Every structure is written in C-alpha cells, then in structure tokens.
Length: 313
Image 1 (cartoon, rainbow, N blue to C red):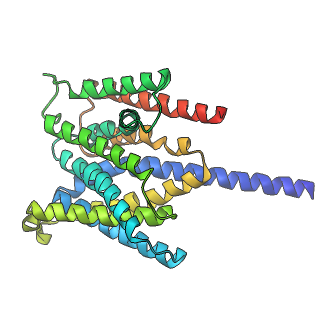
Image 2 (image 1 turned 90 degrees about the vertical axis):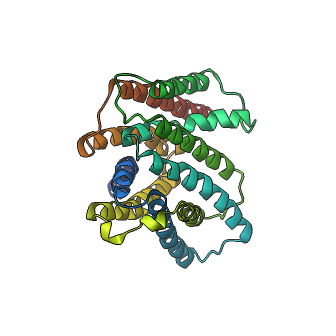
Image 3 (image 1 turned 30 degrees about the vertical axis):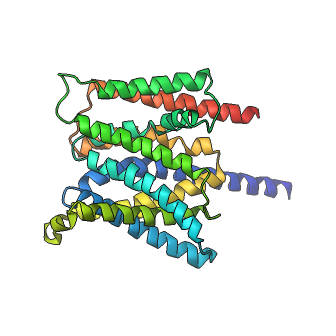
C-alpha cells in the first residue's frame, strides 16, 4: 500500500509539473507572439477596429462561458470599474501598441512594454500607494529606465523603424497599462477573475470600436481587401492570445507563485525578438539588444527580489 501511495504521489506531482510547464510555455510563446500577430492583422484591418473586434468577441465568449458555468451576474458599479480598467488597459495599453506597430518593429514594442513593472513601482511610489523602494528595487528601476533611454536616444546608425512617435506611443501604452493595473487593485470588481476580465475585454473593446468610429476607420473597412493572413492573425489573437493565453495565466495564478507567473514579462520580449527577426524581416540592432539586456535584467531583479522578500515573511 505504501509503495502504491508513493507511486500515486509521484504520478500526481509529475502531472502537476507538466501542467505548470505547459501553462508557462503557453503564456511565454502565445503572449510573446501576439506582437507579430497584431502586425500581420493590421496589414489589411484598420488598427482600432481590429483591436476592438478582437476584445469584444473574446470578452463576449468568455463572459457567456462564465455566466453559464458560475451563474454570476455583475453589479452596475462593477461594470463602472471594469470599464475604467478596460479603457486604460485595452484602449490605452493595447490600442496604442497597435498604432505604434505601424511604424516600429514588434520586438521594440515588446521591449518597451516589458517596462510595465518598473512604471508600476514608480507610479505607485509617486501616488504614495506603496512604500519607498529599497536599494534593489531602485537599482532595478533605474537600470530599466536606462534601457528605455537607450532605445529613445536617436542614432544615425539606426533605420527609420525607430520612429520617435511610435516609441513615445508605446511608452505611453506601458504607463496607461500600469495605471490600469494599479487602479484595479482598489477597484470594485466581481469575485470571479474570469468574469472581471471578460467585462474588461468587452468594455475596453467597445471603447476601441468607438475610437475607431470617430477616427473614420469604418470608411477604410473593406472586406474584399482583407488578406487571409490578416484574417487568420485576427483569429489567432482572439482564440489564442486573448482566450487560451489568458486562461493559462489565470490557471498559473491559482496554482503557482505569482512571481513565477509574472516571468512572462521578461520572456515575451525575447520571443518577440526571435519571431520578428525570422517572420517579419526585422533587424536585430545592437542598440535594441543592449536595451533588451538592460530592461529584462531590471525586471528580473525586481521580480526575484519581491519573491525573496515574500518568502522571508
């Protein structure tokens, strides 16, 4: 009986380990590949409408699933706060990324978005919502922002892909995503994480559609001009990027340390760099590689310091 019990435990641990590895790989690869997916999708789809349609469809599917499974119905005040968060995260964070990818490489966008943890620390400190950062956190934050400065600094050797407006929009996207994440910590949200996210996708997606409407994008929406690769890229973003990737991330948050789950922040840029190089003919410049080392090192330092501090408690 003891031997059987040991074998059962080992089998259970093995299955759990495999599940964790698969979930991590899903978040690493799928979320890292969405930058390339966006670039391909907006080849023939108007940017704001593409992003809006993506999130409205994904959010509606997830919302229907949660309502049927959990039978939970959100309150009006919860819709209010999810709308605010959805606007900051999806209109601000994702919408500006989509626009930026029209002028700068996907890899550069991913590198700048990796600074979100740094902005959250800086904004949280300025808003006095968290204590003053210690030396390790401060060092990591400064290191990360040095990486951003390297990317933003004009260089005669770089080509036109490093468009200053595109870089600025991506930087603003990272800041707005950070603001949305900070606001969500004190917002009134449904107890179900999936329901909350579905609501954020629906409301944020509708705001994106509204912006696209005011921008006159419907006039440029020509179904006959849609390419099959753009269409499949949009489907990939809906079903893999938004639904599968998110589900894997939620599962990780429930089964592993949040710090292990958050490691996607410094893996996604590497995935984006590789995919952009091989599938989008993007140049791996020396400046971009140095900035990547600075920013990813900063996020690693901050992430693992927080994990170490949490364990000591």
